[in-house]
Image (cartoon, rainbow over all chains, first blue to last red; front, side, top):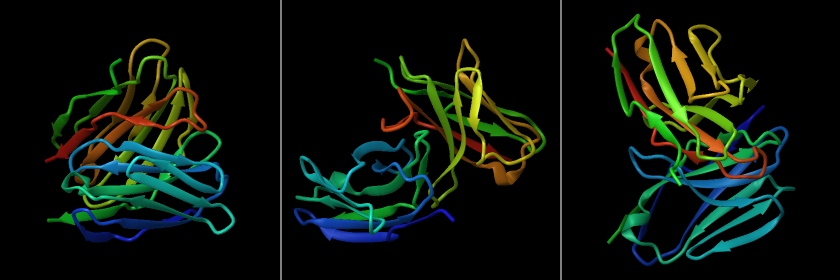
Length: 109
Length: 114
């Protein structure tokens, strides 16, 4: 079966670090994407991992372990504008994304 | 370079009417994907198209829903005889090559069935 799990909600204070975990069991796995979605808006691309290891992009980093079916997104130096839903998605060889339900991150002052 | 354009942004239909949602992919993108998002839920894959071809429609309901991506013009998602349960946000995304390239999403069409 196809399954992508991530926590429903996480709360952190401004300036802190938050790590969003994602586990997946999908057929034809070809890589792992992270997207950010603000309420009422389109998802926007954050990061992509196809090989094991860490990808760093400014304040955001993403990690993948294919053998464990596990990824995380790390958000550093949190800002109020980072309050959003973060979507973990696996991709297949056609580029089709299968999304988890999303993790709502709430950043408090 | 314009992004993925979807219209209309909001669409209200009465039960039994037809809904047509349009999507123009980014310039140079020939792969189009449609997703549906219910309130407080994740994005659910519906259909993947390339020009004039449906590649994967495994997420499409068997009845009332159809999609096309003609040689000229936008991709169209068509819902016939809409019911209240069709109320959702419908997002279109495009990519240049399909595999290994990020999907770029449009702002979505919010369909409300009254």
